[in-house]
Image (cartoon, rainbow, N blue to C red; front, side, top):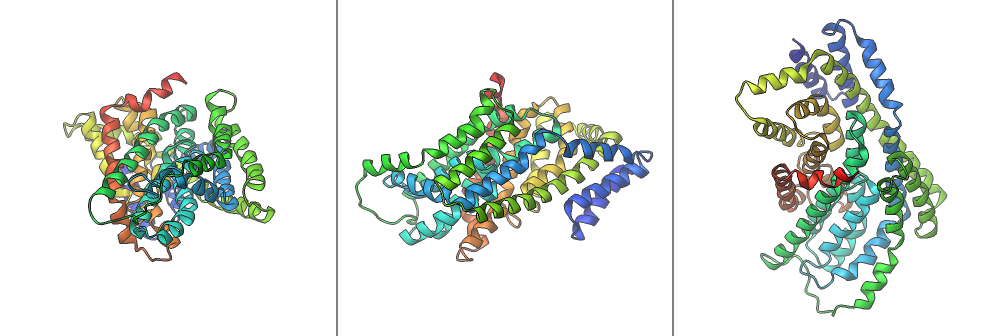
Length: 428
């Protein structure tokens, strides 16, 4: 009966257009009241403990930090600074999109914010230079997904805060996979530029090493900001929340001194960050209630037992979970998908003996896949709106498909070689 209430309740409420957080919370309350002996007070306590938790404070701070960088025009300076470095490499300035997204991800933490910040600069510039519009959007959509994985990742913060997993270790776990996937994107762009129809304009300008060094010197404040955000965590000087606070202060100073930040833009960034966190907090509130219900009723254990009867080993069960994430990723944005599924999948995975740090990276990669999967691939819609629909969603999806395969291939690689994920966290 509990499974019937869970499935029918979620299907009915979500298909009716109800707010996701409200739908999750209502189903959780129904389960606790009718199946849990009226233990609704447990849901209230768990919700209070979640929303007053110290580690969760990092989420609105990192959202605010990303909005400050977006408003201050810092992304434009970084983009222009790295452009000369890739002028003569096969694929040319398409590599700039990936490189700048990778750097911006190290301070933003949000996939859609990264895609929007770099896309608003990169698309008009590369279109003007004669690059294939769909290829430009494909690289920006794929590069934006790195914001979910490369620390400080909002997905990893929320995963750690809700499942009591070390956020510092999760951040370390995301570094090697993030760099490897970024490198794989570079390789694909180089290969694609050599075969098939032309995607870059013909340019005979010689490599200007003076411009390269001047450009790299121009972006020196960004590594300083990355140190404030990540270096203080890895050195043991600050917690993720304290590092986020330092990052916000540093980004404000950098925005006024190095960027084009104004008091009005700062206030707008604060308002936008507050609205975004309110939406995330609503989902987290509903998730806390549902998580308490499914935990009390032992639904994850029942799911593991039912799947075990199929005769599958733990990797077979993992494959089923991956398929579920791929399907749900077509219909839900990354953070919503993460919060909605963790009450079931996290205890299931840990009971099978998988490392919770490793699973945090795997589930984040699956969320990245969803960010460029139609019909609800958020990065696709962010970037097609930036192009004013000059590039259609279907064109953007096809251009992103090779990167979709690369990310999915990364899930396989890190499943076969989990030490690539867990090696760095072992030193923390």
